Structure formats: C-alpha cells, structure tokens
Length: 216
Image (cartoon, rainbow, N blue to C red; front, side):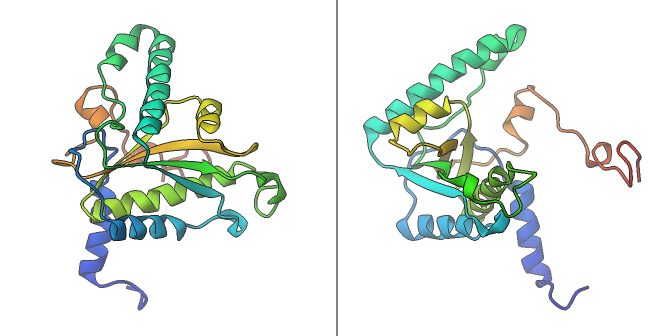
C-alpha cells in the first residue's frame, strides 16, 4: 500500500460514490443550499484539463421562463430522436429522459470560445477539450452523490439553438444540461437497465492487453 494512500474508510467512500453514481431523471423539488452548490462547482473546476486550458463554462439557469424554453428544446429533440430510432422509437418515447421541470438547479455546461488557440495536447487530438469538460462534469457528479444530491446529464438538444437562447459567443458550444437536486431515492441500477433499454457490458469484454482484441 502506498504511503500516499487515503485511509481505508476514505478509500471506501470514494469507491462508493463511484459505484452509486446514477444518471438521475426523477427529482423531488427542494433546493440546493448555496454553499453546497459552491462546493460542487469548485469540485468541477478542480478537474484536470489538457494544457490547463479549463475549457468548461457553467451557466446557472434561474429564470423560470428560460428553463421552460430549454425544456421545449429538449422536447423537440426527443421527438426527432424517436423518429431516428425507427422501430425503437415508441419504446424510447416511454422513457423519462430529463428532469428539467422538477430539479432544484439547472446548469448548462459549455465549451468556451477561442479553443483553437490552445494547441498544447490538442494538435492531433482537438477533442481533448471535450474530454476535459467531461472530467469536470464527472467531478461534479461524484461530489453531488457524496452530498446526497442527484444529477442527470441531458444531451437531447440542438447545440446551436441552445447557444442562441443563452446569447453565447461564436465558437462556444453547449454540450450538457445538468439537472441537479434532491431525489427521493437513487436508482439501484442505471435507469436504462431497469427499463430494459440496454444492458451494461462487463469490463472483461472491454479490456485488452498489448494489441486490440487480445485478452489479458
């Protein structure tokens, strides 16, 4: 055991947050205390980022009319997605895909403008800005679970339409709607598993050694 390791109880708490994190769709109203929201956003901001570019930008939605407009954009994309899914469209429409109307807080996470100026770590992999933003969201997600709050990542929207709604600058791009708030209970397993939409694959099927497809 490394001398830099956390205590056994601390390690157990970290792994518990990872194991019990869920993409939540069912919220019970309430509120998120300002000091808790500040802690969650600071946790997100402590995420690693390629070249320390910190490409994430957070927009807290506090106006009810704006929240409703965002929910309308999600509904438009929900219907388009159902059409694109073909024979699974009706099954998809029965799923609850967002909690925008019920969550305590709604956050929009976007990539900043001017990302092309950041070359460090992105010359051959420009999408590392997205990877960095995803790390920030995961930090927030795990911290929210530790605080007893649910979080759901909604990606059903047209990015340009949302950018225009929020008066975002050219070159920026919204990539996540985060529904955050108290929940009655966390799903025991991912909701899409409970609803029969998909089954997770075991790590053993996704782990190779030395060459693609070669099993350890």
